[in-house]
Amino acid sequence: MAVYDGSVYGDSVALLEAYDTWLDPVLSFDQFKSAVLGLYGSTRFTATGTNTYVTRSGQVIQFTISPETAILSTGFQGEFAYGDIINSAQGSGVITIRNPRRAPGWIILDMHDALNPTRTELGDVERGGIGGHEEVWVDFNSPASVPSGPDGDFYHPVKTLAEAVAVVTDGGTIKIMPGATAETFVQTNKRVNLVAPIGGVIIGGR
Image (cartoon, rainbow, N blue to C red):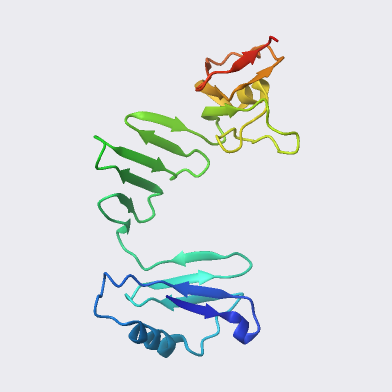
């Protein structure tokens, strides 16, 4: 691994390159180090313009640091990720994950529309985004100091049924963690499934 420490030049930029020796088992660390220093030993990357970095394997990466840190191009053509488990075509926004121990074992993560991502597994499609979420979690016992999750995912659940109904899609599922609420179910035109995965849920009662 090679690390560029910008503090040597009085700025706060840091970069690193990791090289998998499986690609070149003969390459020693000293050879890798010498090659990187030969190309970039006295380089200063600019904070406000476009920078170019060429990796050991010849990949040309163009990136910016400020005002936005972003990778502009990677030099890859065709596949962004390619292997036995994870595959993704360059620029597609779609990742397929294959579990060889589970047939058919495919998970598809589709982010080509960043505002409306989908996840498909064994034929079941879960959608999220600005149009609503097919799965929303509720935790009635969430501490007052913890903000209610705007989207209601497992790690950021909402706190009330009303919030859950507001963001769940028509035909979606509201999953409720153990707890109790004085709420009665919110009137809605949506078709909604209520599920208590591990039980222990009381709604509108004592």
